[in-house]
Amino acid sequence: MEWPKTVEDAIAMQERLRTQVITTSAPDLRIDTVAGLDVGYRSNDTVAGVCVVFDAKSLVVLDEVVVEGTTDFPYIAGLFAFREMPVLLRALEQVTVTPDLLVADGQGLAHPRRFGLACHLGVHTGIPSIGVAKNVMGRFDPPGHDRGSMSDLVMDGDNGDEVVGRALRTQAGVKPVFVSVGHKIDLDRACAEVLRLAPRYRLPETTRRADTLTRQAAS
Image (cartoon, rainbow, N blue to C red; front, side, top):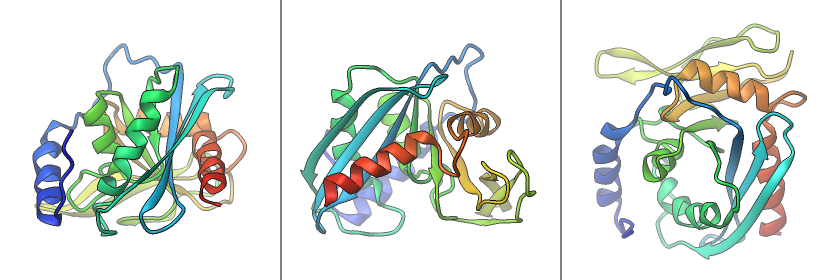
């Protein structure tokens, strides 16, 4: 596909595609395989895209792919997808196991235009997707101390505060992660899947493995 070359065109694409986001889960949604996606930067314009597919139950890695590429889209908050999507899609195309869920290292609906990387990946591929971010975009009250505690993540909307995700405590006493819907999944199910993917550490295994591969590729 033809990717936007200007900021104005990129914003216009986000505004157009955001109307296609589905924030509910299909009644028969079954998630047996999960892909973690992340991008590492070797330089300002040299990037490595990673896709790691796990068995959702055992968390065994089924396949992983690293591809390199370049980007000339500027580094602008809220538009990272236009730097990262092309190389991520190439990585996703090369894995031999089709995932039932995409987990992006970034935002979904928790985005100024409600169309972060996870939304863009989901709408483009048609695969259910969620964003799991290490850093917050929005406001939240601290969730409880225990694993599984959560609180609403809110941003300003047209009619006041709008819930765009949740701060989720994946392990007792550690900093929460920030979960938001990408596409074709509801927020409750998204949080349940993140907890399933994070049995021992703060970050889900999808993100941990993808992070490791992007650091290796960028070094």
